Length: 259
Image 1 (cartoon, rainbow, N blue to C red):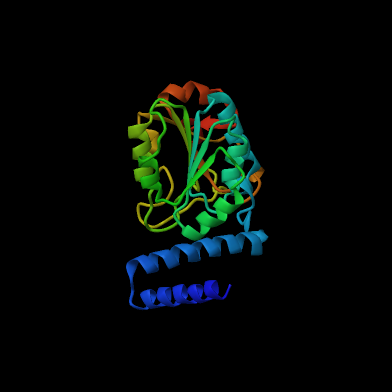
Image 2 (cartoon, rainbow, N blue to C red; image 1 turned 45 degrees about the horizontal axis):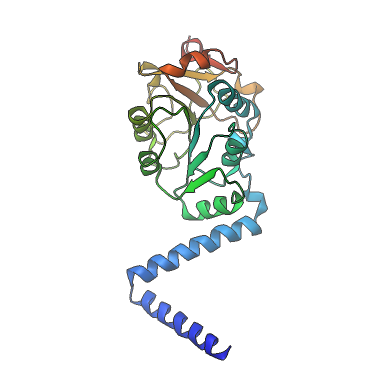
């Protein structure tokens, strides 16, 4: 026992010295373990942070129904999320995926550890501590697979949305994309993110309805009838799945919304 104690002290002294001189490996190792400890500490110490945005999909019950309807209609073979955060929506996606595996990425190391610990019992859920663009680029999902994407990795001036969408359009043939925090035309009750000039999540700055490769839809219920935080959203579909979405009564085509 004494020898073990002495070696532990020696290891700690060695690590402290390597950190003092700025050894890259030591700094990286210390940072990684710090994030792991912080993430797990917050999971156990702050249970109020589990559903800090009100629950899955910002606590919005109608949005949850939109997702369930999409899964039922499209029979997805894979579910992909960017922006795991604390894992609230991630868990809902997995529990209502129709058996499809769920892949989710989170850029923040602390949030990643929090979510990983929270979701550790789900065998069909795979988490990655990556930038969303790198994550989508490296996904090992068949190009032909029916895939649902939930894009919610927008947090700062480095807005990845344009690149995320282009990667999906280039690499997948049968997809549905739901973008959180997107402006719903003619319904100011739904809030949207705005990151400055040219970066408001809206059809003004992201004219997706003009892209002939996809069909666009909005929620078929007004914000006044929604629960939770009432964040806006837009749903996009590859043309091969458009007929499926046309039959879902929780969605309305973009043309009907902007009249």
